[in-house]
Amino acid sequence: MSLFHHQIVFCLVFGLSVIFTNGASINFDVGLESRIVGGAQAEEGAIPYQVSLRLNGWPFCGGSIITVFHIVTAAHCVPGINISQLTVITGTNSLESGGETHGVVEVTSHESYVGSSDYWKYDIAILTLAAELTVTSLQSPIPIATVDPPDGAELLVSGWGRLFSESNAVPTKLQYLWVVAINNTECRETLREEVDDVHLCALRGVGSAVCSGDSGGPLVYNGTLVGVVSWGRSPCASGVPDAYVRMSLMLDFIERVIGTAVSK
Image (cartoon, rainbow, N blue to C red; front, side, top):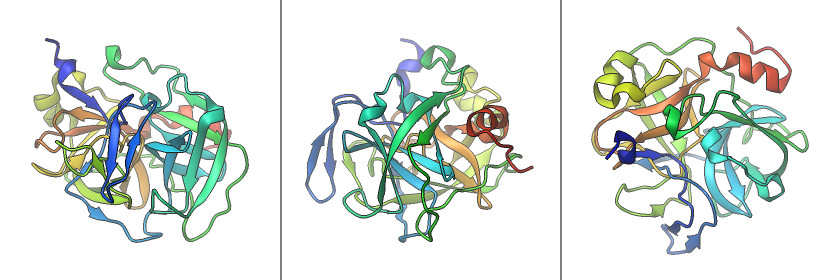
């Protein structure tokens, strides 16, 4: 069996039945797989750049506001997606109510993204909104990091993914978790050849990690976006690093899509 059979991509699986903590059940028509295990509930407005991607109204991945017209997410969240069925919810920590709904007019994945056969390198996509969003205390862009966080730095990751590795239960409120940046040499000792320079690795420890449904969500250091939730080993929270898209190496792609320079 190949090593990749043991990996999990952090989106919601096609056909997955997700059970909310309030007992409601949703059968997703599409998705991949991801979640936050061992995190805590975020206060309203504490993470104003976080968004929820919806397909026909159902949440399936996360993302981050990077301009008033653009959302960054994982490319594996949106392969061949019908943008007429895709919306972005901003300005709320709840999956059940509040916030604003935005249409999407374009989805641009990194031209070098292939997927599992290339170990999920360049797993990044940018959504262009149909109309400009209004910046408020509940929804606002996050600056993109132009340098990497130092080894050992505490990073903030957030999302609505699974609460427990062995369960399909997902939260109705946004969860967050502090993780620690590790260098790729150390990361490769666990994840081996799958880790590339375009990946950034982080780890919390056994019992705490991103998981199904967190894909595309933000990894933040000192108020800047340093990574996008991409993939990790299954089961979640097993004490091995998770891999994120390294934003400092995605700047050329981002600038081409958004049409302006990222502040250095």
